Amino acid sequence: METDTFDVSVSAEEKEEMPKIWNFSAGPGMLPRPVLEAVQREFLDYRGLGASIVEMSHRTHAVEAIVESLTDGLRGLLAIPEDFEIFFTQGGGRTQFAMVPANLLRGKTGAYLVTGLWSAAALEEARRIGRAEAVVRTEGDVPDATECDWPDAAYVYYCDNETVHGIEFSAPPMAPEGVPLVADMSSNFLTRPIDWSRHGVVWAAAQKNFTPAGLTVVIARRDLLGGLLAHMPSMFDWALYAREKSMPNTPPVFQLYIADLVAKWVRSEGGVEELPRRALERSSLLYEALDARPDLYVTNVARRARSRVNVPFALRNPDDLADFIAAGEREGFRQFTGHASVGGLRVSLYNAMPLEGPRRFAEFLRAWRP
Ligand code: PMP
Image (cartoon, rainbow, N blue to C red; front, side, top):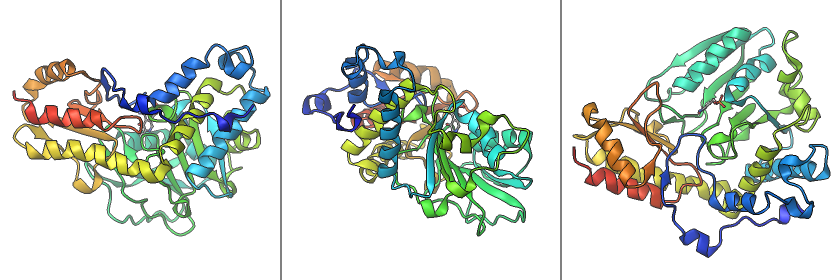
């Protein structure tokens, strides 16, 4: 079972083939077309084994090989040091909001940088588990160099990219000496390198960029494992996942399989050295078009905090929203309305989005008239 020789790189023909619609969903988001085609090709008969991958026990060599290949692939792509464990859990991002304090609090306080909806939700969840406080709250921006004055901080927590508000850190925030920094990278995972010297834990719910919903990747420094609070469910224990190679129970095999293909695709596209360049190029096209027409469009995020993957904006006149959406759909654009909590519009541009998508959307922004 040679999973690592499986080639999912894009052929020249596939590169030329443009989608009929442009899917700007914030998540679950677009996956690379060559990956979906590979999945389709081998869905009924996984690499000559005579059964589909979704029909196989997780105790088979085939599935173990997928997890190993995925883990090794991520370690290589993101240059994850050997003192970090890589493992996969279920329950999505919101379950991880609880697992972070359950594993790290140890009677201390969780210190949260609240920059938008998802860091606020993580703080609320942590408060169900133990003591947690907002060190700083910002709206439409990231905090300046943060002074964390919680003497008993167990960890400092931030959301690297706020998917709803389109706010992204350009560099990791500061944490006091010896206090681990924890990052939620659900919506910008694999869009740039990660500075491991600054982080204790990085985690990502995978459904934006990486695989269908149902898988969360956790990358945690080994010395931070083993501290699960006594009254917590054993399935919250990061150390258990690390020890059992992500299989303390039946894992989501299909999600692991697709994630492995996506990791290979990322490598074939030039890895996290090339993808940040593309993310910047895609999002800049939209920000330029929005900035050019302040009479029509409103953006509320400070320039330094503008997300490269989620571009939220509103119409100067909200009464035009339905017309704008209908006009966009006629152009073939889909899933570009804002999150229910903020309204307006949002264009999401994950790794699989060809440059042509935002290029066309930018043209549309320039041409649209109420
Ligand atoms: N964190 C971020 C940054 C997110 O964007 C989301 C979901 N969009 C979550 C956490 C929550 O993930 P889930 O829906 O898997 O609970």
